[in-house]
Image (tube, rainbow, N blue to C red; front, side, top):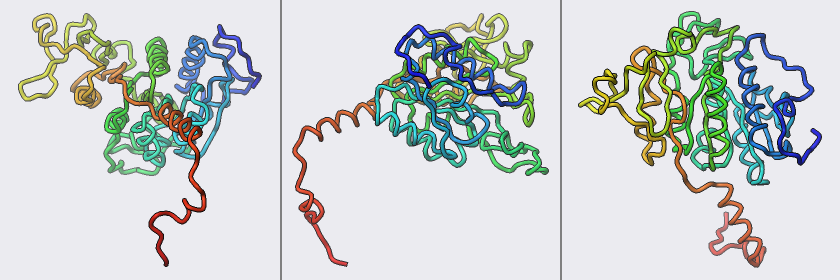
Length: 336
């Protein structure tokens, strides 16, 4: 990469000279386009960005972005990203991962990066399939998924990625869809502005091994009924004329109401609630019973791990160190 300190870069300045090698029609192209556009809009020089990936189709990402990048070990991208951020807190660090990479072999690394609230941006491309290895069911595939390796249908119950993130007490949790370009760019920009770990699940169509998995959400006729756009401070309305809304029933569970007749009952979205309970409820909603909420589900502030780590390192450097021999002997030695 050729460093440049000049802000005001354009999207094309974040496109590398590498040939993009994804299947024609893959949703990754749209996400790459959105990320490059957002990077340009953030006004940072290219050398301030670092893109870190694990293993999978999406993990080719660092080759295609003209920034610093690491293509790392399966499932370990959050760990590498944590190290990068601790070494240089001034960097804007982005993790690119897939549903298999992040939620199977890398599940433990993901949840601990989120609970620590390291200031990195984690983008989970969810196509509900292992694409790179030719179509096995993944941790987010629906129960009963028939694939070459599960001809009778999978027995596993799927992970819900945003629920996993909320369960780890992530401070920023959002969801978007590859085909909703403007929405995706807006969510990515919000993630970049958040101080602490941001987690964005992106529904991504794999047109070779799981084509149409999200068609009910993206079809022109279906998106109005099946998608709920979350906006902070605004009522949760959906439908072609926003004629329906989400309310809480007497049993404490969500229900759909006629928003025009029962407007007062429609919930107002508050992404800043300290309790993740409402965000968790929203994250569990999905068609056909409910519309799928997309946008920012939760955005709260909490101590940021890398900042506190940097402060502690400064204090340690300014404090005379202990006698090494005394430290090795320790206050409570024992013999084996």
